[in-house]
Length: 199
Length: 112
Image (cartoon, rainbow over all chains, first blue to last red; front, side, top):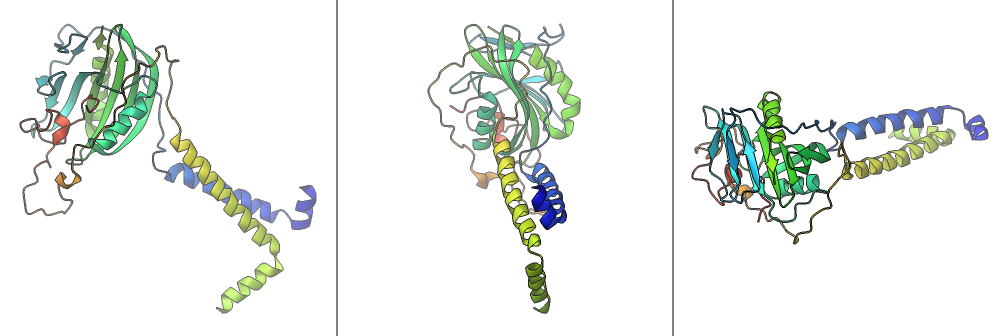
């Protein structure tokens, strides 16, 4: 190598190094889906404040607690949902609990959720952070924070989506808000997720 | 044309330039491949080791339920009232009753 440098000079090597650095920079910032991801926040499982109402899954395997500013809304017959709607009818906060229905698994929950969003509701979905072994009241779960754009209406939402395994059953809790309101909504949504009770 | 001839001649005089260009090309391809591989891999932030064995369940193939054609047009001045442009309350809970059938947040069902 020393001989090569002596023969050729240092300029080719310098050019290679400089362009390689540029290439790395371009790749890091330009490849889709490689957004900076932070760590999934630590959940501290705890009962919801006394003022929070509760919704029990029809099969009795989980209890969703929600802030008083939300109201129950209709959804699938085996699930429960609560939401706070804005003046124009838009969703400001959204909570949902649904029993596990099929191939959801703790070990690849994040990939499953993103795949489901892309195939069903969303034109795009990206992971922000994820974690496994998250402690819940009565169980353990795998969680994902992601952002997606709905196929209908092109609405931008961020969500916390957790698959939670209890002693006898598993269920999914979703906590979502429009991206524009995510920063404000996030603490309440995390509180609701931390209060989720499974059996 | 004259310029490109001059460039070619210059490259002939300085073969190390060709070497450098080739090396940069190879490096760029390798780095791009590494980047794609990394993006395809997991970026999960595992706060703890998994403590539960994954439950087995029958395979499921989520089927798209929304036709892209139902999305509102992107034109700046629509002449027809867009049905879903205001992030609405699900009107009558279409489909299987999910909010997400109407542009609302996605629920937690496994799409069965």
